[in-house]
Image (cartoon, rainbow, N blue to C red):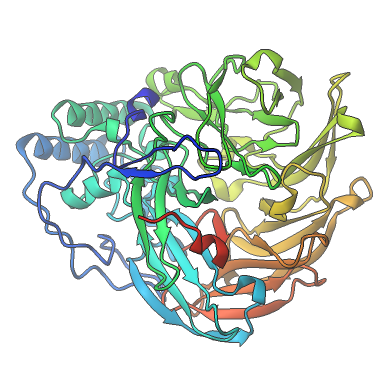
Amino acid sequence: MDALFSSPTFLRISAVRTEDKPPRTTIHQPYKPKTSTTTTTQPNLEKSKSPGSSPPPTNRAQAPPPSIPAALCNALDDLINNFIDPAVHRPSVDPRHVLSGNWDPVGELSPTPCPVVRGRIPRCLAGGAYIRNGPNPQHLPRGPHHLFDGDGMLHSLLLSSTSATGDAVLCSRYVHTYKYLLEREAGEPVLPSVFAGFHGAGGIARGAVAAARVLTGQMNLLEGAGLANTSLAFHAGQLYALGESDLPYAVHLDPSSGEIATRGRCDFEGRLVMGMTAHPKKDPATGELFAFRYGPVPPFVTYFRFDRAGRKLADVPIFSVREPSFLHDFAVTERHAVFPDVQIVMKPMDMVLGGGAPVGSDRGKVTRLGVLPRYAASEAEMRWFEVPGLNPIHAVNAWEEDGGRTLVLVAPNVLSVEHALDRMDLVHSCVEMVRVDLESGAATRTPLSAENLDFGVIHPGYVGRKNRYAYLGVGDPMPKISGVVKLDFQKAGRGDCVVARREFGPGCFGGEPFFVPEGDGKEEDAGYLVSYVHDEGSGESRFVVMDARSPELDVVAEVLLPSRVPYGFHGLFVTLTDLRSQRPR
């Protein structure tokens, strides 16, 4: 299936052959809607709204009547969703439950001023922008729906560059993926939920309908089927929206107006195919970007990197991964790339033969860490170390000690791996420090906290280097974040490593914090944590700035947002300097 995603679509990033110039951008836009459509400012969701949410849609896209093949496929979808696999029989993927509260989608928002209502914006944030990615379905799902399957929407807050108390500008825009544009034109869902729709007999039937749509020309999976809803990255003068099932989508944030727009899908001169992790790692010293992709066909994992100018370099296929697994994140050090081989695996035959889901857990699998020299030309030097029971979905950081003999990985370990995808509210993750002796192969694990912690971040200048502090969200339950804690790794082995905490308050939840450094970086915790926080009682959403050095992570500034910002996944802070360095259109 992943091979279907390999063709370039909206935009191709082509590289010039000079070391110190960024790749030049060439735009190709083969897909255009067949009919004239009106841009929707509200998602097409007809359901009761939670406090502070957008009103029901008022200016939908004017969709044409469906073709005969499309009408037939729609009727088959309705049959499957109403009689074979109705969402009501699986509450964890019932849209009425999944898209409730502050997960309820919102409409797009044009750049809108919003006031600083508390404190002053620190100087290191001035003129920069905090951008958070997350799922926001543009249509009411036909059947079962998973949070991971919402269309990507970027919520960008541009801060004033001239005044610490001046108005910020909020803008919320969909990432214009092929799937988004296809379904906007159709005026209804076309593709089923990947994480919830392919389950048992209903999943087989949905797969058949999707195949029929491809064969009758209703959609072209060569254009990509991803959502770009997971995270963002900034590299070589270009901002990207990321989702691991597709190629990166280039986006542009106007530093004067706050408008954010999609430029297109990037295949880097045809060198990047199928997909890319939503968690690439940027080396702060070399400026290189390290990444990988994974999929259901061999090689199940492929490692690659981009140079500091943005050119994608050669693939390193990793055939020693023996079965496809859910490899969402990895880590890099100054010498190595580190890949967790976890107990969340792809099992398509379980759907065909056992009525299960194509992705699930395998408790009998012995988990491993794969360690590969980060400049390896092949997997010949890949080494695997068994670390039973280690199931990290995200990595916090990794580094070497003892002259390179010991590799250290810090990551939240999912204890209830069987619930990692289908019942995230039951997931509990404990942050651990794993030490691997690269000579003897011995591995030890040290818990850093017993709390339910995930979505960890560090000072970006310490990626791949030994560091002391990390900041993580407190699940209450996951993926809702009720507060932020600060861990001190120097306390490892001497009890709980939490040294600072900020609770958002009753009924208030945020997301992953992002660390913005202040000064020259010599003091690792000199900087600020930023996040969106939503009050479920009042319906208000705010942008919150916290002092990372203070014992209670004191709030030093708040911006009242003009509309509700739903919960989401990962964010990024882009400095004023980087915003001004974006490549021209």
